[in-house]
Length: 146
Image 1: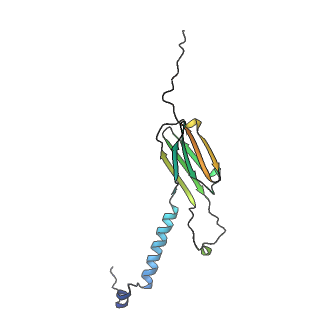
Image 2: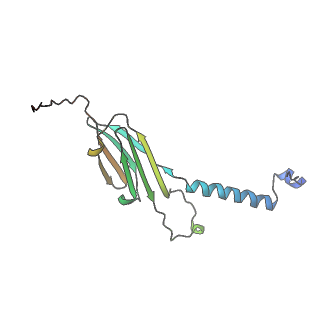
């Protein structure tokens, strides 16, 4: 139903208190929905002569709260950063850090050996080294006689 604005509302662009409360509750719902979504990690991906290297910042995340899944052509990093719940929301002046679940899947530019991957965490920086598959590598097979 369309509500007619008063002359003062038209002049100032203001709203009635009930409309403000309705709009505020809709905005709070949108913010709450956004906060429940999974965050996405920022990553750097580069190569060395032997490895594909993936780096990401995971400061504040315990290693046991991280999960790394590697396929030959893809890597997925998932985790959760726990919020300090001892501080009341009303006491914050600014709250910009991301808390909660996050993940990132990266398609790799070259196939890697998942079994030989190595992950190191240093001062909040997670470094994952993925050895490249050597497609030029050849081996000979000895034939057995039965």
